Length: 218
Ligand code: HEC
View 1: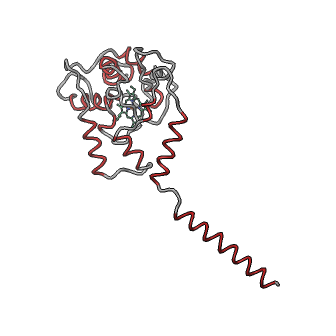
View 2: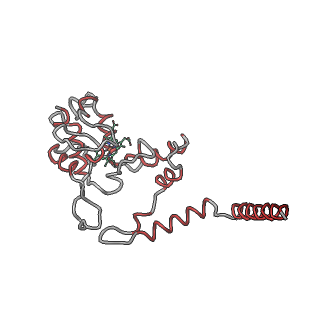
View 3: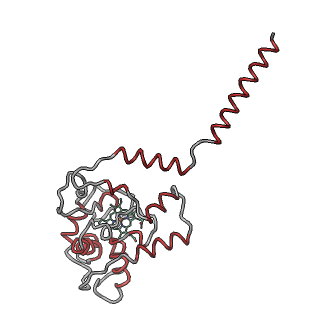
């Protein structure tokens, strides 16, 4: 009697294990999990105002960074992404890189833009303080990105129009235009490439960072 019960118990456990193994073998593949996840995300959002569903579409660069799940990308892939993004950078047509730092400070402070409650055609802000310290006068800032206080000064930009300053001026423009040009999986918005800031707004933010008269460099 006792033996029979034991036997029955072992049999039940065996059946359960077989069922578990079978369920593992026919369980969803990673591709199926991805598809199901995409479906859940898609069904969790709806269009409203200027915010359309195309926001959920990743471009090839974002897709590669998403697929890597936080692990560093393979060097070759990272280089290819950076090269492709660098190609999108449009330098200012008139060769003028710097605008007005006071306007730049307003743009850096402004966190509005691109949400369903923003009106079409309204200028966006840069939200720079969400991630960076910039001017010392602003005490509230995020620290996801490096401090940009003394940005131009620390890089020896005494005259932004000089030949000597050209590499750092061009790099900064490129970084603002498309942050992935220099860091494949950068978490910084691609301001020019994404149409978030206009060329003139980027000039003004450039002045905030690089104009020797800007409070950032004083
Ligand atoms: C969502 C966060 C985020 C926002 C918003 C953001 N950045 Fe960044 N930024 C970063 C991160 C993270 C880095 C460092 C990693 C990298 O280089 O991509 C960075 C790097 C930079 C660099 C390069 C610094 C260096 O020493 O090379 C500059 C310049 C810069 N940001 C300027 C800006 C400006 C100006 C704005 C607003 C127009 C802005 N960022 C908005 C996250 C952000």
